[in-house]
Length: 223
Image (cartoon, rainbow, N blue to C red; front, top):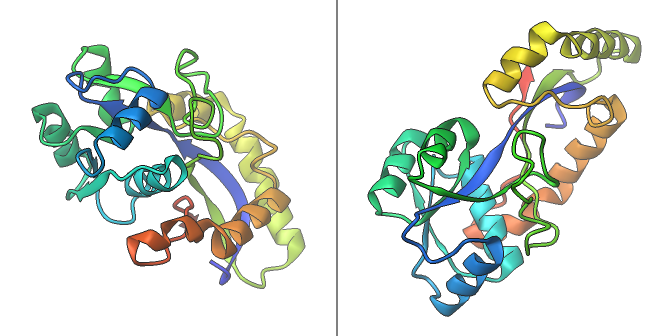
């Protein structure tokens, strides 16, 4: 990531913690208590090793001090099918994958993985406020330029992208796909540099237990 210069943060792909209705938990605190009483017996699925839903589960294990087993699948759809069929018990799923099943009553939503509550689900707490302080997985997308590009060019690009993101032509389709447009504060160039440096130097520390160092960050669109 140090080979690129952050330009602008665009959208965040929200993840949501969903469980099998047969699982006797109705909150994050319930889940932690159940996992501690049944170490190694809960399986959380993901769309693959190193994806945001995998990293969310690994971070949850570390911060909540529980031992849930990771079951990787080849994509979010197969993982969701495994959850619906009862082969696994929970997923930190993307909203677009889970929301239909939550609304139909086939899955139970416990929390969102963002640092705080979101407007899309005002009644759902963030994992951090629901019993796991410090938990936050922000699967964000942004724009990068090659390292060494002049500051005036980055500033101009940032201003143009920032203006475009404020347009209803961008915000409405993004929300339809459950991709809330990042606000101006988190989209600032300075903030992007801080996020990048944190994820390179600190973000991966929580995943050493997985046998590798994986930055806990978002996916980036570069040009």
